[in-house]
Length: 215
Image 1 (tube, rainbow, N blue to C red):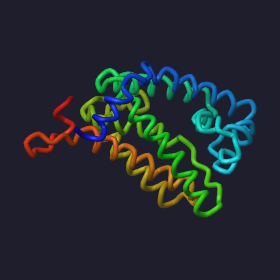
Image 2: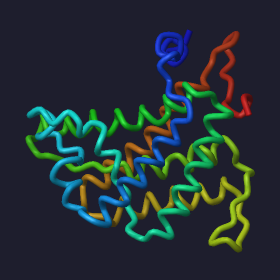
Image 3: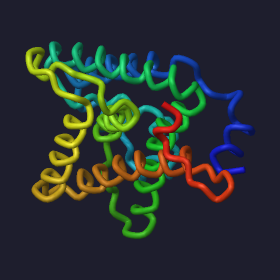
């Protein structure tokens, strides 16, 4: 029995159905905070490891309220798209598997932030932006031939759009000076890779089963 299967057996009953609905509510609340009082997030809600270790444990959840855009049009489009992607993945994968994917990304950010602070005494700021983007990357790996309308006019398959996204990640990693952004990019890619490794490498008579077998 794999690690993932053991976790599913022990924790499956605690999985949250329709998780993407709650995530999108957090996106909208985060957008409103960023629009009307952005400092509220940075003072009281973000993933500040020093504050967390001094009792601000609510930040382990509230840092997810961060939304990267202040444009209401793109916020509405983003929420609609990610809700559709997340709901589709939950329907195909199952409730626990989608919960596992999302919360593993959350835990990677939290663990890295606190560990970095304990080792360096520097409060590295990590935001869930790239973790959100990784939902599309996971979707593209599951449905590589799904078609999206880029800018509403240009049809493009998910696998090519995902390739473009990875290239953008790589470019930003090389050019963005902020260490927190670099680490957040690596963690988002690690989350996707680790998720598929843990959930699709099932050994049956010595054979490794690829995740495409379950589509």
